Image (tube, rainbow, N blue to C red):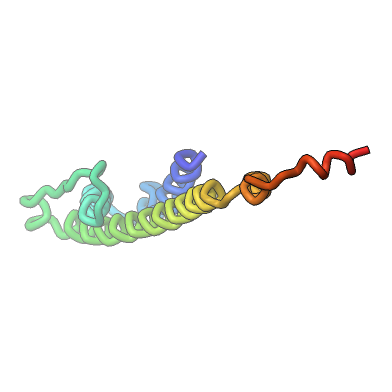
Length: 133
């Protein structure tokens, strides 16, 4: 259940990211879009996502202003998306671990029947049996 929740949250965060079509609608060039994708992957990796790759065409970054601008914008978005995903994951993990702690506390509490049985240990209850009728 927890994995499903985290997967849905991550997918919704990634869906909030900038798309190719939105970049094209803004009039961005293909070089900018490629740079943006490379930068976004790099930004997510820099922000701690071990499943992402740092991608940067250094030669193109130095010579192509469109690629460089896209890469820098993508890097910033990638960092932001990863930080949001990390925050959500930590919150969900904290809620889940809090639930588990509650379960363990309940297990550690003595059961009322056990308390009563322990309290009656060594007490002669033979005389009480006559009251049952």
